[in-house]
Length: 152
Image (cartoon, rainbow, N blue to C red):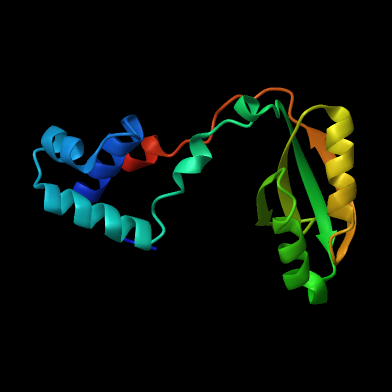
């Protein structure tokens, strides 16, 4: 992961405020050379500091207004195959390994409760998945956010 300096943080904060800003506009707004902004953005992207732009698309806009969080237990010797299988389920928007009682936390996007059930059945058919538990998201109280971390 890339270590951020003050200029990186300014560039990222400006980009977070206006994700569609061009390099030229960011440079003008920040009083930096266009080449500096471009080089910083390339380094930050290569270093993993920037997420893909598509994460800004809401599932609701795609006709998938229901979200659910699925925890799963995995046979460890099937882990790589399970990841490959999970990646083929388009409604899986995030899958992270966790500590605690379960091995995975999977966020899914669905049309309705029946669709959640269908997706969880596909998850159960992934190699190595032993058991799942599903919780429906009732309301998003805080959206995924990182801009406030740039101030630290």
